Image 1 (spheres, rainbow, N blue to C red):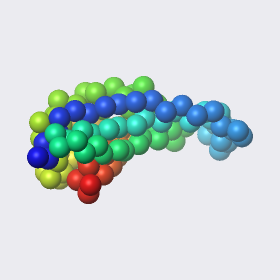
Image 2: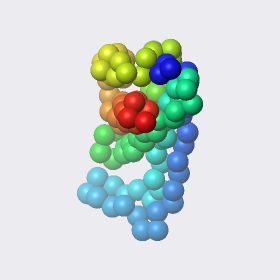
Image 3: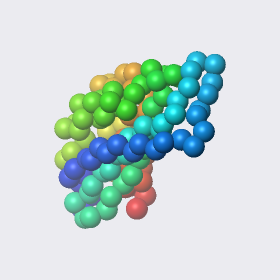
Image 4: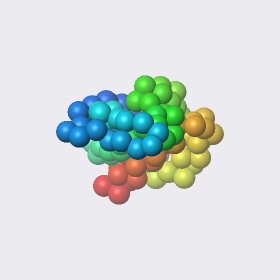
Length: 113
């Protein structure tokens, strides 16, 4: 079966060897978010959010909270219904674009497997 049974959210923190510097500021650490979507047949889809407070105003914490806020809107759905799931997530996550992208990547990864 292809029903989504769970959605996981994990932090990925990596210290940069050299700081990432642009005119808006400097980042010395990558603070990303890994999203996992689990299907009832054992398939796991992966997606990653790369928020940048300097560019989009998103942080690791705001992305995590946004994903957790829509978790119940994803679990129990058919993975093949990606378009409707994505549209529903978009209605509830307005400003956390990397969170939406990570969810969609994980959905597509699970779907394609």
